Length: 295
Image (cartoon, rainbow, N blue to C red):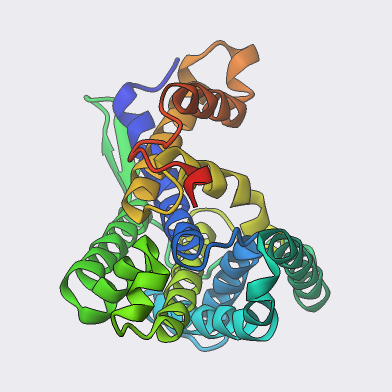
């Protein structure tokens, strides 16, 4: 018997949470650096393994693992950007795109050599399940943590972008980098911060993935298509649109898997992309009406 709608909404919120953090980081780089970073999925994987090491080797709990993953992935992502991407900034979008694909492939295979291909699991206490049998749904404390951490990160990013001078400078740079430079904004510093925040959020998404599922060298790469779809659905370049797009995508996939006929529900992710195409045909700029091709 199919689970009720509330249960599928819970599953969709969990799926949408780590996709949202990945999509926000991806779209920040797209909007401010004007680059499609295909290595973004590997930053998620690095974050997942950093969290695993913090918990299994360091003996720390999940809060410390989240902080460690954010810091490690932020530094790694920023370092890769400075060593590989920034020197090619004037080469144009295609060389940058191809470089990011190569960087992602190298990172993925490097992690496979170091960590092995098998899945790893966070050694956390067994989740507590809260059942509401009379209403026909349940949730666990780990699911609450995943959704709560994602929403807290989104709120923190909103406050940073709207209440701090550096955040306002990031928004101005995203709107018009040349004008921002003329008005005295240090756009180079802004780009540094963008890479740090984007990569750090990817690391947090990796830990949430490891909590919900497991971690392996392809963890982030396997989610990259969903992240790209969420970013485009929300309007590439808009972090707020990316969050909305991610949750709509997560809920849509969850509902499709359960409520559509079996032959169709086996392609839940494919159905989400069908919805994406339909939305873009009606509204090419996505939910926030910010067109990908406008930049």
